[in-house]
Length: 482
Ligand SMILES: Nc1ncnc2c1ncn2[C@@H]1O[C@H](COP(=O)(O)OP(=O)(O)O)[C@@H](O)[C@H]1O
Ligand SMILES: O=P(O)(O)O[C@H]1O[C@H](CO)[C@@H](O[C@H]2O[C@H](CO)[C@@H](O)[C@H](O)[C@H]2O)[C@H](O)[C@H]1O
Image (cartoon, rainbow, N blue to C red):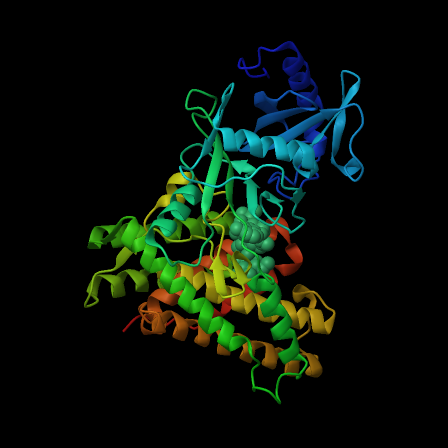
């Protein structure tokens, strides 16, 4: 393997060679690295660029795996790593230590200054959106939330999302956040800038990080929903409201989602699908199912019925009174993608499903796809709360346990109630009532559950039973659309 010809500076070339040796073992331990099945994946650094050299060095590194997946790292170099960063050490190089730098406030502060100033460092470009306020000197702190990328907050004012699994092409999130801002009065964070590789760099222009406004909040939708669901599962919410107070929040989430969809439709492209395009949509769902079955054999017994569910979608979409509309959508909407700000819900993370090619993330889709995805999340929250109360992971719960069954009924009632409240909110804010399109909704929910089965099989096998229960339910009650 060869190190990128872009590495010309001797110090950077030495670090690139050391990273080539050190990274396989280190990457295999990172949550955001997709090749978890390998003890020491083969990775080739395709870009190693020093982006800050005045003080401890900061390098931008892009590696390519043997499966042609590309990942980004920010690497610091110091004689001794700052306190609290010993776990970030990648290894020794030239008498100093290389370490993952997102947890280093000094280096992150300097990176922010580079974005604020604009310009380039070798093959790396820094962009500040016109008019964006990017104050210097704010304390940087890496977020510890479980996420696909790594986010660094600056003094509760800004947040830099360092993308991990990077793909060539313009970044959907920058484009979508800018569109939502233009629409005005939409619950989303303002974009401030971004960092990318130049079009002539390996990969031909990759977005590396997105800087946006930090939204002060009292938690994300997932944490709040699970807590509420838990209270209902143990029977604590019955005296106040039979299924708990979250329904009001679920209604507000539905309203926020409708506003996001309306703004995306107004600011970016939207169009009607003709019958041939509907057929292509159905074919794409079925291809995704088949690829999923290859990875998760437990899906195989449901494949025939799920294909029929896709066919139903096609028939209903072609013979409906109105053509099926498609537009830019969020792409991976779930409770964890929402923040409860003081005055309501804010939707975040407009990157689409992690791992999808950029063209796929930008493809116009029925808005119902996002709704189906969020409805799945209520189901997840209920199952998670139940697992928490029973002290047994979702995959190990026994249906014979009567106590468990009673609690499971409450969990399921909570999910149904809040799914309904979300749909009602979506409709109240001007969106088409999702419940008026049950065949389409079922197909998209089934598609999301299949995606989740693959996600869980790779990331959290103990949770696989959650999407599998949905697959069973959605495939099982299949009746030909009539
Ligand atoms: N604009 C923001 N303001 C405040 N916190 C945010 C913002 N965007 C994201 N976060 C926090 O960072 C976490 C991860 O962000 P997210 O965009 O979902 O990353 P990922 O794509 O890696 O999943 C969120 O769960 C949230 O807690
Ligand atoms: O937030 P990400 O962009 O990293 O999305 C991925 O990870 C999510 C889990 O963190 C995953 O979401 C699934 O689990 C959630 C609970 O943890 C649940 O609320 C979602 O409904 C469920 O899909 C998401 O699918 C994946 O793309």
